[in-house]
Structures are given as structure tokens and as C-alpha cells.
Amino acid sequence: MNRAKLIQDENLSFRVSHQLLPEDYQRIDLYFSLPVEMGINPSTLNVEEFFYANIKNQSAYYADQLHLPLVRSRFISQNKGEQGDYRLNLNLYSYQVKKALDADIKFTLKLKTAEEFYPAAVELAEQTIALTKKLRRYTPSDKKLNSFFENADNYLSWHIEQSFLRLLSRGPKSSDFTTERELLLTLCRSENEYRIENKYNSQVTLDDANRITNKMRLLQRLIEYGVVFQRKPRYLNVNLKRFVRGVVTAFIMAFVMLLVLNARTNFTEVTIALVAFLGVIYGLRETFKDDLTDLIWRKIQKGRPKWQNLFTHSVTKKRIMSQILWLEYINPKDLPNSVNNLFQERGQQNKQDAQLLHFRCDNKVLAKKFLPGYDEIQQQTFFNLTPFVRFLKKGAGRLYSLDGQKISNQAVERRYQINLVLRHLYKDEESIQRFKITLNRSEIVNLERIKDN
Image (tube, rainbow, N blue to C red; front, side):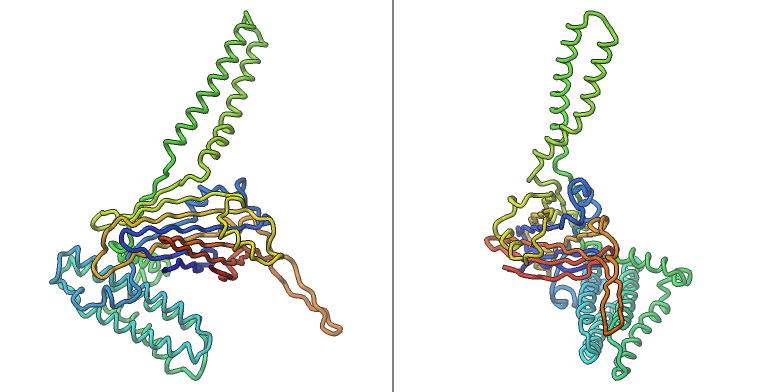
């Protein structure tokens, strides 16, 4: 079983990713145990608002080896296939190179010693040079195709330069590897000069960091065309919610009309008392109608799916995959036994009062086959935890210590710990992993996998 992976994405976000086969079905569950002292509950954090603003889904073709789908000399030739085929193949290649480079850069940055870091970085640079040569070997002469090529080539060149500059700035420093460092810097200079020679970007754009960055974001979206599937979200319970609201309104109106008719029977003339009584009736109706509707709706909606995502291929417009999504607060008794047992294995000091938040995603692949060379698609769900830190307290003061006759102190920050269980169901197999997320007001300090079954 290819289990789901949970990885930190940015300062306050993480992503869950897993692969799916044609006509496949998999289920992902996330159980958040949020300490009560964080102040997160149904009154302070609305799940629907959190879902729309902070949970994103992305689905795209996936290959774990570059040479499998795309690194072929024939795919770049404009003589093979139609214009749409050329653009799709070019985007598949460019996207795959970018994903592979990002993954390798992250892996290389984990090497903390210069003896490990620089040989790995040089090897990565040599592989990158080989891939860009393969791309640039077949520059199309057709102007329609050439614009696609220039966009992809421009973005990849810029992304390669930025990736290796970031690698060098964050990597270990050592005077023993001056030659290797210079080789990496030469790659960055050559890519920059290559873009200048081909006049890919105007001088005005190059002089403005915001303009060049935003342009590259646009080019990145262009190379995702045909690779990353288009997502169409849909709220599932619109008609049901209208029905509940209608039934509640009809019930309240019937009750109000009954009171009004009784009032007319008791008051033979229009008096101030009658007017006041009718005002009280209609005031109570407006006061309790929404509260009663919300109460009934919460009871009906509990446990029901809330959203659906439909993923379609941006070129063929065929449906590739369907997702059904849940997000709701739950009680401890709603936890599956396997998940509850894993939560109970925490240390006694960590078993504090907590609010449970449950996210569920059912993935069903509709396509019977994928593009040639691709056996899987990758589904990624991104979670932004920024709303979780909204109510967190700032620094907790200072820590004092005694060293002989000298008293010293240092500033300390307040940190919070979220326990998270990831459950992955595939056919008859179940994979459960528990993670500990330590965060402060500005970032996830540590994301650690504690235990799995």
C-alpha cells in the first residue's frame, strides 16, 4: 500500500499527498486534536469559512521517475502530433522537471555537512543541465509553437537559477569546496545570460522584482495547462438547506397565525394591547426563526458530506476524478477505535482538554486510463493553519538562570502543540499515522511523526 504522506509546505501550512490509479478509490481522514487553550471552537472558527479560505486541493499527472513519461527526444519535435499535442507534451516535460528539481533541492538542503552537501548539489546541477539541453535541442521554427516553447524555457531557466541560488544561500559554508561552489554559481550565471541573449524579459521587467516574480508565476500557470486538472467545486446541500429553511419558516408562520387568530377572538376591537401583543408575536418570530433553523440544520447536516470537487482535463475536458469532502467538529465518542487508541498513547501531560476537528476526503478516479507514460495521478490537499494562531498569546516572558553569582535571562516564546492523526483507507487496508505539530504565532516550529500502525 502506497500510504499518504504529510509534509510541511510553508511557514504555517502543510500538505497531504497520495497517488491514485485509474478507476481507483481511496479515503483520507484527518483528526485534529486542538487544545482548548488555543481558543478554537465552533463559536470562533466557522468550518465552512475555514474550508473555503484555507483548504486547497490539487490533482495532476504523476511519475516518480523522470525518464518514464517525458524525457524522450521525440516529444519535442514539432513534426510529431498537432499543435495541442506539442503544447501538452512540452508542459508535461516542464512540469515534471520543476517538480523533480523542487524535490531534489529540498532533499539536498537536508544535508547539513559540507562533505555531503556539495557533491549532491553538483550532481543535481549536472542532471539539470542535461535536462535543459534535451529541452533546447529542438527549438520549433513555427511561430505558434515557438511562443509555447519560449514561455516554458523562460520559466524553467529562471526557476533553475532561483533554486540553486537558494540552495547555496541556505547550504553549509566551507572553504574546502570553492570549486564546487563556483560550478554552481556558473550554472546560475549561464541561465541568467541565456535569458538575456534570447530577450525573454524586458529590461523594465528585470529591474522590478515584483514584476519579474509575478510574470514567472503566470508562466508557471501556463506550463500547468493540461497537467494540473481543472477543479470545479460544488456545495452539496444547497437544496436540502433551502428545504429545511422552508419547513421551519412554514411551521413558525403557522404557529404565529394561530396566535394571531386567537388574539383577534379575544380582542374584539383594535386596542393598544392588541397591537403590542401582535408586535411581541412577530418579534419572537424574527428572533427565534434563524436560531431554530440553524439548530435543526446542524442536527441534519452532522455526518453528511458538504462539498464535491470535480477534476477535468483542461485540454480534453473529460472528467478525471471526483472528490467528496467533509469538515466538522466532532465529539470523542465519534472517533474510530483505531484513531482513539492512537490518541490515548500520548503522554499523560499531553492528554489535555481538546476540541476535535475532522476532515474527510473520498477520492474516486473516473478515468479508465491516463496519458501514455503515466500510470498514476497525484492528489494533494493543502492546509493553511493561519486561522489556528489567531487567538494564540504572544511571548511568555523570560527564563531566568543562575550561573555562580550571576543571574542571566533569555526571552522565551509560547508554543502550542496540535496532535493530528492521518488515516488512509485503500481497499481493505488501513494506514494510521500520528503527528505532533508544534507552532507559535508565526510558523510551524516542528512537524514530527510520532507513531503509526
